[in-house]
Image (cartoon, rainbow, N blue to C red; front, side):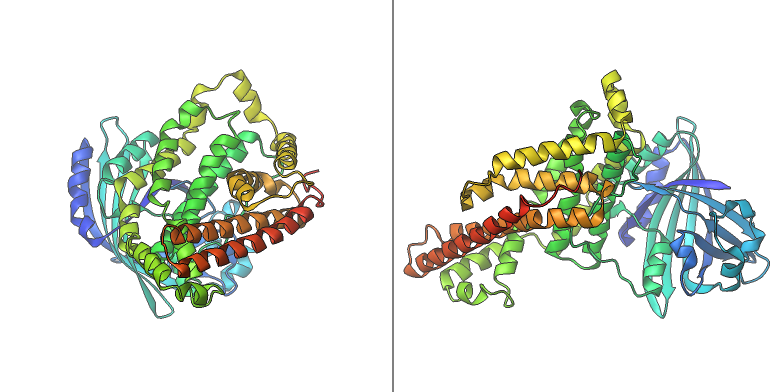
Length: 506
């Protein structure tokens, strides 16, 4: 058995010729292996039983030799891929699961039945160039360039990838090589394997953005440290997923999901401050702040697109105000283009950030300044501290939103950040509790936060009307203020319902 420890990158065609030179600059010695034309077929049952177990079964032929490979469920930590792999010679064109050691299979897997029902799902065919390098520190790393295509159900998707795999030595050298390579402007970290891409193509299930940030997957018996690592890993992969979604189909809402993932990572640093010293995250926090600043225009862009859409109830009113429509059009014209955003996701600074987060997560960088108090806190069961965290939030909400007090638009806009942080605590820790109870309790609070977003939109449009000395815009401004008052009334009703809900963590 081999365990892959590798980083994957996606390349533009322009970068391919530059890779050999960069490898030579970095390595102490380089062995250039002959290029190979690899023909691969991936197998599963009609009901995708192997896929459900996160098992990949592949046959690979090159020249006159063939092999079959099993990749078992592994771990993706940030951008680092780690999976157990088993290879055997292939005697015929069809793989045979029974040839593998039976001890490798997950408990309860029906190996015989699955083996009888295997058939090819998709193929990947590519030219592979390989280098084996030795670093100054003595580590050995395999560098692989793949150029070809995934084929499934008559559809084709290009493969243009670079993989670097640690063969022997220090994992830190793998990250040093990655840092050296990402100076290329047309290169970015890849989250998805060829197999994952092939299954999506074969099953006609394109990658789709999430509607909301969701909840960090947690086991009931996790410690605080395990929960923190899970939150950071979830955030990194959430960002990477929606980065890929943007390349597949650019949209503002997909960029908002990227922002959500970044925000969850930053929030996790604060939420788990008892075990994460600020000094260990100073550089990361600075880079996350930079990335958020690069995307700070997105929310206003969503506001403008939403309220000027022909499907929106406000469209006619706003579009009839020529001065306001002109201002909005000018604002849209100066927004970054999809090419600008793709350049951001390809730039070295962005990819260094994803790489740095991954390395910090893999190396457990938060432990560097631990004292005995941090160690004790890290080992505490999350269930022992989550309730006290939620109770503290609940008390603060009662203080910020007292039941007997009537709140105005300004109150709600001022409370936005605090309410978002409270909901993010639930996103990080809420998986410990019953889903239905959690959703019932959170729904009115989520409604209030969405109401605050809409208030922000109305406030933004009002600001656009101000300073324009025309009666038409003054009328629009009055109309916007009435809409805001109506919205606040609805939010006040949601607040009343919110305080009647039973706290799901108790």
